[in-house]
Image (cartoon, rainbow, N blue to C red; front, side, top):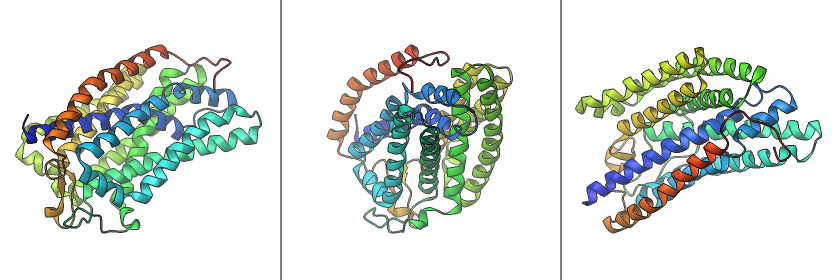
Length: 342
């Protein structure tokens, strides 16, 4: 393969890993966001936690793999992103760690205050992680002040501009919607009915924020639509995204939780594709000096490195996919509490 083909291939693989993480850990985070609002008593909270209990750690492997692939395939972009988002990444790391600890420690003691504290931590860490992911997306989309060497030259507070916070809120609503649909699949009775009502509230927030982010992107980031002007076929992506979003409401209204979840997952895939189309060929867009942007081509490793990595990915990815299929098939169906449940 040529260097350009290898760089494009790894760019596409990064998109696949990002979409896989957003779909799989997205509903984990969504369940955490809805934790104070959907389950009412201790038994229902345990059911909510056990809906993701066997799955959450495997889901986060996709994020680790994405980070590893970015580090090896595009080291300059990895270095610039981690230097620019350093404090945000530290906060994200603590949120993900505290979320895992909340899951594991909550049921170790039967005291109501103990469990209420860990419940609050589970919600706060899930909300913060989702918000930070969205803020990162907003900053990457709008552009970062990069030097000629690709170094971030702004401050931490510069990352918290209105557009980034808007995209952060959008991602929170997206994951809450995705998590609510997952709870519909994993629960029964009154808990499922409340999950369904939460889905409608999350759906309303998602639609409003989707429109707001789209308008804000059109106005604030005109570069985001440049590729759509040159490649008209890209307009298929937002059309498919809109169709998936509409079908989420249709499936929920008809009580088809599985179809709603698939539609929600497809909507996430389309959103990642829209993000990629808006950014291409940039990995990190520089603003206000676009000539300092880091692209798939000027930030990539050598062709030999990309070839070796592609071979490793071809050998390892089938195992990851097989494990994912087996674990989800094993734990399919509504949650049943047992002696070893959270």
